[in-house]
Image (cartoon, rainbow, N blue to C red; front, side, top):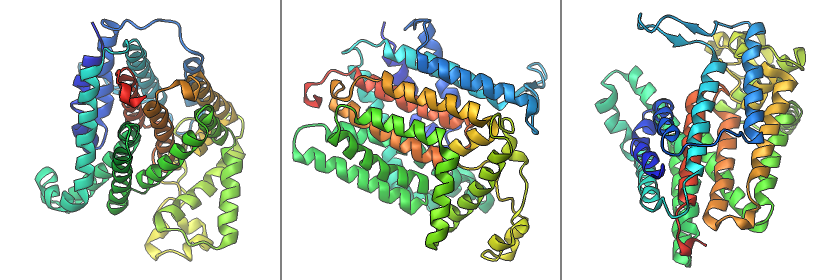
Length: 415
C-alpha cells in the first residue's frame, strides 16, 4: 500500500492550517507522520545529515543547563489537563522525529505510485496561493468574520495572514517550477506571472520576508539554470557557510550599511540594531553560547542606546532591542549554542546538499523547486522566526514532503 494517499489527505488541510497562522501544521505533521510506521515502514539506518541534525539538537537541549531562562523539560500532568513541554529543545526534537518519519516514508514511495496524490497536493497548494492572491483585496472586509469586531483581534488575524504568506513562500517554488518546466513559452510565461503576482501580493500584505523569498527564488532558478550540474550543491554550501560564518558576515554587512548612510525601512532598521546587540552577546560566550532561548532574557531597551533612540519616537524608549529573539536564526544559533552548535548545524545543511543527486540527474521541475525552496527558507531563516519555532520547521517539513511526492509522479513532459 502506498503512503502517498495519506500525505495527500493531510494536505487537504494545508490551506486552512497555513492561513490560520501555521501553528496547526505542528499537529498536521504528527498526524501525517504516524501512518508511515505502519504503511511505509521506513528503514532504521539514519543518514549522515540526520545524525548531524540530531547532534545539534542534543547540544541545544544540553544548553538548558546553562540557559538563564531554562524552565525545565515538562510541567503539569496529563490528568490535570495542564501538561506542557517547556523545553524548546525537546519540542524541536519531537518535530525532528516526526519529520524523519514523514520524509523517510515519503522517500519510499515508488515512482508512478503518487499520480493522483500529487495532483491533490498541487491543488491544495494552488488553493493556498489563490487565498494569498485574494488577501490584499478581501482581508480587511473578512477579518471580522473570523476574528470578531475587536481591533486587537484583527491585529492577530493579520499576523496569522503574514505567517500564511510565509508558508506559501515555501511552496511557491513547487508551483512555479512545475508550471515552468512544461514545454512551451506559454507555460513559462504563466510560471513567471504566478511568481510576480505572488511577489506583489506579499509586498501589499507587508510580508517582507516572503517577498524577498520570492525574489531570491528567482535568483536561485537562474543559478540552477546556469549551473545545472552543481548549482544546487553550491546553494546548500553557501547556506552552510552563512551559518558557520554568520557573526563575521553580519558584522561586515552592518558596518557597510552604517558607512553607506542607507536609510533602512523601520522594521529592517530595528532588526539591524537587534543583530548588533546579539553579535555583542556572541562575543561574550563564543564557544558554548548563552544557552537555549537565552535571547529572551536580553531586555536592554532602546533607552540604553541614545544614538539609536535619537532616531526614534520617545515611546520606543521602553521597547527591548532584542524582541524575544534576534529574528535571524544563524545569529541565534551562535548566540545560544555557540560555535559548537553553529558548526554542527552548518555541517547538517552541507550534508543535505551533497546527499542530493547531482543536479542534472534530477527532473527539471524538482531541481528548480529545491533551489527555490532553499532560497525562500533562507529568507525566512534570516528575517522572521526563532530557530526554536516548531511551527516553522513543521511547515518546512511538509513543504519538503510535497516536493518528494511530486518527484514520484511520472510525467514525460516534465523531463
